[in-house]
Image (tube, rainbow, N blue to C red; front, side):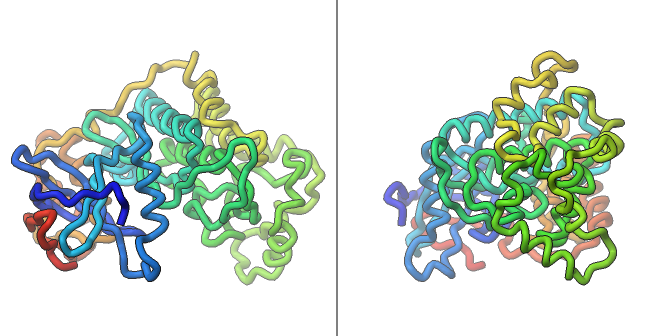
Length: 410
């Protein structure tokens, strides 16, 4: 158990389970007599045969030292008398995925710029503290009712050496946001892996969905090169020295899926220089929605060669943020709350399985924020019809827990 943990007597009332990942369950809870909302992350201990999970220990240690407006705040860690360990976070009403999935949300150019700026400021702070996040994606970007974005879920994060990159695992970063160097087996890397993810998320703000949706590592490379052009040694000198470069070409030539062009096409003639046609593909796909400055920003963050890829600070200094209109504006109107949506969803006859709970809850909240005439039950009806899912809630809303007492069983 972490030495910084404390056993508290303050009661917490569970409002709803709002997420579950590899490393634990997350609950929305009301704390104390004033009803302060917090997020409780219960650390999963089932597979911790040799003691407290290393990933959770690392996450706690990192977050205790981080203080930034755009990084999730860990208030404290605590234990119950039964030995369960919890991390207490500030409560955030939404994640970016839940906002983008709702058809009534239409971010203005100012809103997009604000979200991109907040993400990059958070990243710049982390990298300045020599911290790699290594799992940037929409569900790990949280928003509160003021439209403030915060980077969350540091389960895969770690510190790194800026002067001499260490030898780290390449089995990090969710596939759709994984940079090409990791897909090709690189184990020496730094902040550039997060910069690629930020570039993917920047385009996602315009597309409203992940831009590079591969099925596996080979197909992921294919999807990336179909948009950004082939991988060439002229643009990326160290490309052919990556561990899985030749293996990828061999595996792809035997790939059973014939529905898409092989990745080998993107890895052949690697000494060639990208043609105007290759450059035009990206323009054709995004030129109608990206300004000149936004196009420059996306290209900088999505540069193949990690040594040439823009850092978060590079990105913040580009024309998109410094000279190009409009000025950033937080999207507060899309995340303002009108009622206790979790309670409304719980009461609705067609509530949601916990695996899609957060997305459904976000959609209901957005419905309320964007349709003033709607009430919670109307929104819950609308969202349940859209999601077509059945009720399955592992913890009842309203269950109470006393830290130092017993939590309801899962």
